[in-house]
Length: 432
Ligand code: BGC
Image (cartoon, rainbow, N blue to C red; front, side, top):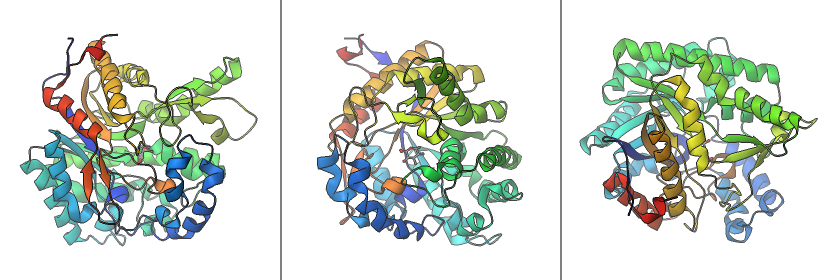
């Protein structure tokens, strides 16, 4: 029997994001989701009917209630019980978020009750010996920030840095790892280039100039925020979170090869290069391989999910070797790497155990080949609100019954827990 042992102190964990699990948020998505719900439900068959999972997902996907975040997984009130799940799985890390709109509901007005809430959350993790990684911005904005031209406003980076400073001052003693902004590449694509993507995001439009400006603003925001955090805690580990699919040309024609290179560069690669020396670690997300075909059409239409081989409920193909490829490519940045998201929507829990195993196998190979990888956080701890697809995609290690809010660990979660406890992959399947 072969054994693939991970480095001592390797962080085994799961990830969450505020708006997807907390419930009761008031931000630029809340209210807006209600205006979209009927339309998204009515159009579900058109949009999703081709998926192999359609028979299984159709009931929820055609229910307007599926598209309204509402109470989400009520994690805001049930976080202690959720942390019990982590302990049950022997996990040593959790990615949690802080919801900017809760902390600063009006410009410059800080809600101290909410700060206390997040202090309680973080203290509870520390008491349990669980390392928190804290995201400051995960796609949602306070309504006032959105209304003031969100990331395009000249003051936007400063506004974000002021908020980061509040968190550093008030909660920084509890935060070893900071994720400033989640997947700026996805945000910019969906918001500033995704005017033709359906289902859309709030404020979606198609404007390349604005997309480039928003990227620049987010880079600036990260740098300013990092400086403020470091004033209080020089040893703080900071990163943006970078979503890095493997982009491959669908056909081997020179235009598509070039298009795949362009898309790779214009996404997170550009951000990572611009932030070289300004990130203390790299928070990377890996989900799948995406095919690129160059077309005389807007860039949003160049992307196609890999549908070869096994497909998850959203039709994404499974390509574990990609986690090796993206971590090897990130070695050049010479900072530690943490996989802060990797997972799949799989409500019947048919693929997840093997998916986790195979991704960890390739992650371990990458460590052997010199990548300094310090942790793996599975997306997600709980079934949650998957943005404009709502609740039908089930990414959770734990299933959530949205009526009773009861949690139930899926069998794959227990298998993952055994790997975490052993700090190793131990079965014969590790052999090639
Ligand atoms: C995002 C998550 C999302 C996940 C699955 C990532 O891009 O950060 O919020 O739920 O992908 O789609």
